[in-house]
Length: 335
Image (cartoon, rainbow, N blue to C red; front, side, top):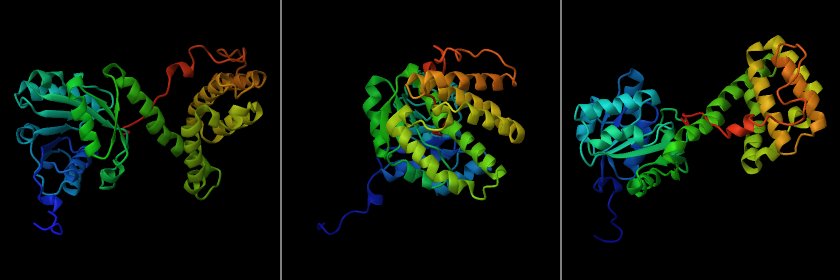
Protein backbone atom coordinates (compact mmCIF):
# COMPACT_ATOMS: atom_id res chain seq x y z
CA UNK A 1 0.00 0.00 0.00
CA UNK A 2 1.42 3.40 -0.93
CA UNK A 3 1.78 6.12 1.68
CA UNK A 4 -1.03 8.02 -0.04
CA UNK A 5 -3.49 5.19 0.54
CA UNK A 6 -4.24 5.35 4.28
CA UNK A 7 -6.82 2.92 5.70
CA UNK A 8 -10.19 4.29 6.62
CA UNK A 9 -10.40 4.58 10.46
CA UNK A 10 -13.77 2.82 10.26
CA UNK A 11 -12.05 -0.26 8.85
CA UNK A 12 -9.67 -0.79 11.76
CA UNK A 13 -10.54 -3.70 14.06
CA UNK A 14 -12.43 -2.71 17.19
CA UNK A 15 -10.62 -3.40 20.43
CA UNK A 16 -13.62 -3.97 22.70
CA UNK A 17 -17.28 -4.62 22.19
CA UNK A 18 -19.31 -2.11 24.20
CA UNK A 19 -22.76 -2.44 25.76
CA UNK A 20 -24.94 0.12 27.54
CA UNK A 21 -27.41 -0.71 30.31
CA UNK A 22 -29.60 2.35 30.78
CA UNK A 23 -29.98 4.58 27.71
CA UNK A 24 -30.37 7.81 29.62
CA UNK A 25 -28.49 10.94 28.66
CA UNK A 26 -25.05 9.66 29.68
CA UNK A 27 -24.66 6.10 28.43
CA UNK A 28 -25.23 6.58 24.69
CA UNK A 29 -22.89 9.59 24.65
CA UNK A 30 -20.07 7.67 26.32
CA UNK A 31 -20.58 4.70 24.01
CA UNK A 32 -20.52 6.99 20.98
CA UNK A 33 -17.29 8.52 22.25
CA UNK A 34 -15.74 5.09 22.71
CA UNK A 35 -16.83 4.23 19.18
CA UNK A 36 -14.84 7.21 17.90
CA UNK A 37 -11.82 5.73 19.69
CA UNK A 38 -12.18 2.44 17.81
CA UNK A 39 -14.38 0.36 20.11
CA UNK A 40 -17.60 -1.21 18.82
CA UNK A 41 -20.99 -0.68 20.48
CA UNK A 42 -22.98 -3.89 20.10
CA UNK A 43 -26.01 -3.60 22.39
CA UNK A 44 -28.02 -1.13 24.44
CA UNK A 45 -30.96 -1.46 26.79
CA UNK A 46 -33.62 1.17 27.33
CA UNK A 47 -37.20 1.10 28.53
CA UNK A 48 -38.78 4.49 27.90
CA UNK A 49 -39.54 5.97 24.50
CA UNK A 50 -37.10 8.80 25.25
CA UNK A 51 -34.33 6.30 26.00
CA UNK A 52 -34.98 4.45 22.77
CA UNK A 53 -34.90 7.69 20.80
CA UNK A 54 -31.59 8.69 22.38
CA UNK A 55 -30.10 5.30 21.59
CA UNK A 56 -31.27 5.56 18.00
CA UNK A 57 -29.82 9.06 17.65
CA UNK A 58 -26.40 8.46 19.18
CA UNK A 59 -25.98 4.75 18.48
CA UNK A 60 -27.76 4.08 15.16
CA UNK A 61 -27.98 0.43 14.11
CA UNK A 62 -27.05 -0.78 17.62
CA UNK A 63 -29.76 -3.23 18.71
CA UNK A 64 -31.97 -2.62 21.75
CA UNK A 65 -31.97 -5.72 23.95
CA UNK A 66 -32.66 -6.64 27.61
CA UNK A 67 -29.88 -5.87 30.15
CA UNK A 68 -28.78 -9.52 30.51
CA UNK A 69 -28.30 -9.75 26.76
CA UNK A 70 -26.23 -6.57 26.78
CA UNK A 71 -23.82 -8.27 29.17
CA UNK A 72 -23.83 -11.42 27.07
CA UNK A 73 -22.72 -9.49 23.97
CA UNK A 74 -20.27 -6.94 25.36
CA UNK A 75 -16.77 -7.07 26.80
CA UNK A 76 -17.10 -3.54 28.23
CA UNK A 77 -20.45 -2.71 29.83
CA UNK A 78 -21.54 0.79 30.83
CA UNK A 79 -24.05 0.79 33.70
CA UNK A 80 -25.61 4.23 33.32
CA UNK A 81 -28.66 4.12 35.57
CA UNK A 82 -29.76 6.46 38.40
CA UNK A 83 -27.66 6.24 41.57
CA UNK A 84 -30.40 4.68 43.68
CA UNK A 85 -31.00 1.95 41.11
CA UNK A 86 -27.36 0.95 40.73
CA UNK A 87 -26.84 -1.36 43.76
CA UNK A 88 -29.95 -3.41 42.97
CA UNK A 89 -29.04 -3.66 39.29
CA UNK A 90 -25.52 -4.90 40.05
CA UNK A 91 -26.78 -7.43 42.59
CA UNK A 92 -29.44 -8.71 40.21
CA UNK A 93 -27.04 -9.12 37.29
CA UNK A 94 -24.58 -11.00 39.48
CA UNK A 95 -27.21 -13.25 41.04
CA UNK A 96 -28.61 -14.27 37.67
CA UNK A 97 -25.21 -15.17 36.27
CA UNK A 98 -25.22 -12.41 33.67
CA UNK A 99 -21.75 -11.20 34.66
CA UNK A 100 -18.81 -12.93 32.97
CA UNK A 101 -15.27 -13.33 34.35
CA UNK A 102 -12.92 -10.76 32.85
CA UNK A 103 -15.73 -8.45 31.77
CA UNK A 104 -15.11 -4.73 32.27
CA UNK A 105 -18.04 -3.32 34.23
CA UNK A 106 -18.15 0.49 34.36
CA UNK A 107 -20.65 2.61 36.25
CA UNK A 108 -20.96 6.39 35.91
CA UNK A 109 -22.46 7.31 39.28
CA UNK A 110 -20.81 10.21 41.05
CA UNK A 111 -21.92 9.03 44.47
CA UNK A 112 -20.52 5.50 44.38
CA UNK A 113 -16.98 4.23 44.02
CA UNK A 114 -15.97 0.77 42.87
CA UNK A 115 -17.28 -1.11 45.93
CA UNK A 116 -20.88 -0.93 44.71
CA UNK A 117 -19.70 -3.35 42.02
CA UNK A 118 -18.47 -5.93 44.58
CA UNK A 119 -21.18 -8.48 43.65
CA UNK A 120 -19.92 -8.37 40.07
CA UNK A 121 -16.31 -8.48 41.26
CA UNK A 122 -17.03 -11.73 43.09
CA UNK A 123 -18.39 -13.06 39.78
CA UNK A 124 -15.08 -12.23 38.12
CA UNK A 125 -15.82 -8.82 36.58
CA UNK A 126 -13.35 -5.95 36.51
CA UNK A 127 -14.99 -2.98 38.32
CA UNK A 128 -14.46 0.66 37.31
CA UNK A 129 -16.20 3.87 38.47
CA UNK A 130 -15.91 6.61 35.82
CA UNK A 131 -18.03 9.68 36.50
CA UNK A 132 -17.99 12.50 33.92
CA UNK A 133 -18.19 15.89 35.61
CA UNK A 134 -20.49 17.25 32.93
CA UNK A 135 -24.16 17.93 32.32
CA UNK A 136 -25.74 15.98 29.46
CA UNK A 137 -28.53 16.82 27.02
CA UNK A 138 -29.05 13.44 25.33
CA UNK A 139 -27.93 14.86 21.97
CA UNK A 140 -24.76 14.56 19.86
CA UNK A 141 -23.35 17.76 21.40
CA UNK A 142 -22.60 15.70 24.52
CA UNK A 143 -19.91 13.73 22.67
CA UNK A 144 -18.14 16.97 21.77
CA UNK A 145 -18.36 18.24 25.34
CA UNK A 146 -16.45 15.23 26.63
CA UNK A 147 -13.27 16.71 25.14
CA UNK A 148 -11.37 18.06 28.13
CA UNK A 149 -14.08 16.95 30.60
CA UNK A 150 -12.79 15.74 33.97
CA UNK A 151 -13.86 12.26 35.11
CA UNK A 152 -13.90 11.14 38.74
CA UNK A 153 -12.08 7.79 38.60
CA UNK A 154 -12.19 5.10 41.29
CA UNK A 155 -11.03 1.52 40.78
CA UNK A 156 -8.88 -1.19 42.35
CA UNK A 157 -5.26 -0.13 42.14
CA UNK A 158 -4.43 -2.84 39.62
CA UNK A 159 -7.10 -1.43 37.27
CA UNK A 160 -6.22 2.23 37.70
CA UNK A 161 -4.24 2.48 34.45
CA UNK A 162 -7.03 0.78 32.48
CA UNK A 163 -9.63 3.14 33.95
CA UNK A 164 -7.58 6.22 33.17
CA UNK A 165 -6.87 4.97 29.65
CA UNK A 166 -10.60 4.64 28.91
CA UNK A 167 -11.19 8.20 30.09
CA UNK A 168 -8.40 9.50 27.89
CA UNK A 169 -9.81 7.60 24.91
CA UNK A 170 -13.11 9.43 25.42
CA UNK A 171 -11.24 12.74 25.33
CA UNK A 172 -11.54 13.27 29.08
CA UNK A 173 -9.12 14.06 31.89
CA UNK A 174 -8.94 11.40 34.64
CA UNK A 175 -9.04 12.66 38.23
CA UNK A 176 -8.46 10.01 40.89
CA UNK A 177 -11.01 10.01 43.74
CA UNK A 178 -10.55 7.72 46.75
CA UNK A 179 -13.39 5.30 47.50
CA UNK A 180 -14.33 6.94 50.82
CA UNK A 181 -14.36 10.44 49.30
CA UNK A 182 -16.85 9.75 46.51
CA UNK A 183 -19.91 11.14 48.37
CA UNK A 184 -18.01 14.34 49.24
CA UNK A 185 -16.75 14.63 45.66
CA UNK A 186 -20.28 14.27 44.32
CA UNK A 187 -21.70 16.72 46.85
CA UNK A 188 -19.16 19.29 45.65
CA UNK A 189 -20.28 18.90 42.05
CA UNK A 190 -23.97 19.06 43.03
CA UNK A 191 -23.45 22.30 44.93
CA UNK A 192 -21.43 23.90 42.16
CA UNK A 193 -23.48 22.82 39.13
CA UNK A 194 -26.98 21.58 40.03
CA UNK A 195 -27.62 24.32 42.57
CA UNK A 196 -26.21 26.87 40.15
CA UNK A 197 -29.04 26.06 37.75
CA UNK A 198 -31.56 26.81 40.50
CA UNK A 199 -29.88 30.11 41.37
CA UNK A 200 -29.74 31.23 37.74
CA UNK A 201 -33.37 30.27 37.14
CA UNK A 202 -34.47 32.23 40.20
CA UNK A 203 -32.40 35.25 39.15
CA UNK A 204 -34.02 35.19 35.70
CA UNK A 205 -37.50 35.05 37.24
CA UNK A 206 -36.75 38.02 39.50
CA UNK A 207 -35.39 40.07 36.61
CA UNK A 208 -38.55 39.39 34.60
CA UNK A 209 -40.59 40.50 37.63
CA UNK A 210 -38.47 43.68 37.71
CA UNK A 211 -39.36 44.37 34.07
CA UNK A 212 -36.17 43.20 32.34
CA UNK A 213 -37.09 41.92 28.87
CA UNK A 214 -33.99 39.79 28.25
CA UNK A 215 -32.73 38.48 31.59
CA UNK A 216 -30.58 35.86 29.88
CA UNK A 217 -28.74 38.54 27.92
CA UNK A 218 -28.24 40.58 31.08
CA UNK A 219 -27.02 37.68 33.19
CA UNK A 220 -24.79 36.01 30.60
CA UNK A 221 -21.78 38.36 30.75
CA UNK A 222 -22.16 38.91 34.50
CA UNK A 223 -22.28 35.20 35.36
CA UNK A 224 -19.50 34.39 32.93
CA UNK A 225 -17.22 36.95 34.56
CA UNK A 226 -18.19 35.85 38.08
CA UNK A 227 -17.47 32.20 37.26
CA UNK A 228 -14.15 33.00 35.62
CA UNK A 229 -13.09 35.25 38.51
CA UNK A 230 -14.09 32.72 41.17
CA UNK A 231 -12.25 29.86 39.45
CA UNK A 232 -9.15 32.04 39.18
CA UNK A 233 -9.24 33.81 42.53
CA UNK A 234 -11.54 31.86 44.86
CA UNK A 235 -13.05 33.89 47.69
CA UNK A 236 -11.04 36.97 46.64
CA UNK A 237 -13.51 37.30 43.76
CA UNK A 238 -16.42 38.06 46.14
CA UNK A 239 -18.21 41.33 45.41
CA UNK A 240 -21.61 42.81 46.20
CA UNK A 241 -23.46 44.14 49.23
CA UNK A 242 -22.85 41.16 51.52
CA UNK A 243 -19.09 41.19 50.95
CA UNK A 244 -19.10 44.97 51.52
CA UNK A 245 -21.24 44.77 54.66
CA UNK A 246 -24.07 46.91 53.21
CA UNK A 247 -26.71 45.90 55.74
CA UNK A 248 -29.25 48.44 54.49
CA UNK A 249 -29.08 47.13 50.93
CA UNK A 250 -29.48 43.55 52.10
CA UNK A 251 -32.48 44.56 54.22
CA UNK A 252 -34.05 46.15 51.11
CA UNK A 253 -33.44 42.96 49.15
CA UNK A 254 -35.14 40.92 51.85
CA UNK A 255 -38.17 43.22 51.89
CA UNK A 256 -38.61 43.01 48.11
CA UNK A 257 -38.16 39.25 48.01
CA UNK A 258 -40.67 38.81 50.79
CA UNK A 259 -43.15 40.91 48.79
CA UNK A 260 -42.61 39.64 45.25
CA UNK A 261 -40.92 36.23 45.50
CA UNK A 262 -41.20 34.76 49.00
CA UNK A 263 -40.28 31.32 47.67
CA UNK A 264 -36.74 32.61 47.01
CA UNK A 265 -36.17 34.23 50.40
CA UNK A 266 -34.86 31.20 52.29
CA UNK A 267 -32.28 30.50 49.60
CA UNK A 268 -31.21 34.14 49.47
CA UNK A 269 -30.71 34.27 53.25
CA UNK A 270 -28.79 30.98 53.32
CA UNK A 271 -26.44 32.06 50.55
CA UNK A 272 -26.02 35.54 52.05
CA UNK A 273 -25.04 34.05 55.41
CA UNK A 274 -22.61 31.63 53.78
CA UNK A 275 -21.13 34.50 51.76
CA UNK A 276 -20.77 36.66 54.88
CA UNK A 277 -19.04 33.84 56.77
CA UNK A 278 -16.57 33.27 53.92
CA UNK A 279 -15.95 37.01 53.49
CA UNK A 280 -15.23 37.32 57.21
CA UNK A 281 -12.97 34.29 57.29
CA UNK A 282 -10.89 35.65 54.39
CA UNK A 283 -10.64 39.22 55.66
CA UNK A 284 -12.86 40.71 52.96
CA UNK A 285 -15.64 41.82 55.31
CA UNK A 286 -14.75 44.04 58.26
CA UNK A 287 -16.04 42.72 61.61
CA UNK A 288 -17.53 46.10 62.54
CA UNK A 289 -19.63 46.05 59.35
CA UNK A 290 -20.49 42.39 59.68
CA UNK A 291 -22.38 42.80 62.96
CA UNK A 292 -25.29 44.82 61.53
CA UNK A 293 -25.38 42.62 58.43
CA UNK A 294 -25.61 39.41 60.42
CA UNK A 295 -28.35 40.89 62.61
CA UNK A 296 -30.38 41.69 59.47
CA UNK A 297 -29.93 38.14 58.20
CA UNK A 298 -30.82 36.58 61.55
CA UNK A 299 -33.90 38.79 62.02
CA UNK A 300 -35.06 38.07 58.48
CA UNK A 301 -34.66 34.34 58.96
CA UNK A 302 -36.76 34.49 62.13
CA UNK A 303 -39.53 36.44 60.41
CA UNK A 304 -38.41 39.89 61.47
CA UNK A 305 -38.27 39.42 65.23
CA UNK A 306 -35.20 40.95 66.84
CA UNK A 307 -32.89 38.53 68.50
CA UNK A 308 -29.38 37.24 68.68
CA UNK A 309 -27.51 35.65 65.81
CA UNK A 310 -25.67 32.38 65.73
CA UNK A 311 -22.17 33.69 66.06
CA UNK A 312 -23.17 36.86 64.20
CA UNK A 313 -22.95 39.52 66.93
CA UNK A 314 -19.39 38.50 67.68
CA UNK A 315 -18.36 39.60 64.20
CA UNK A 316 -16.93 36.21 63.26
CA UNK A 317 -18.24 33.11 61.48
CA UNK A 318 -19.41 30.06 63.38
CA UNK A 319 -16.70 27.51 63.99
CA UNK A 320 -18.90 24.88 62.37
CA UNK A 321 -20.46 27.14 59.74
CA UNK A 322 -20.43 26.77 55.95
CA UNK A 323 -16.63 26.88 55.69
CA UNK A 324 -16.38 23.68 57.71
CA UNK A 325 -18.50 21.83 55.15
CA UNK A 326 -16.08 22.44 52.31
CA UNK A 327 -17.05 22.84 48.67
CA UNK A 328 -20.05 20.94 47.31
CA UNK A 329 -21.57 20.19 43.37
CA UNK A 330 -24.71 19.09 41.70
CA UNK A 331 -24.63 16.63 38.78
CA UNK A 332 -24.99 15.16 37.53
CA UNK A 333 -25.43 15.52 36.94
CA UNK A 334 -22.03 16.90 36.32
CA UNK A 335 -24.81 15.15 35.39
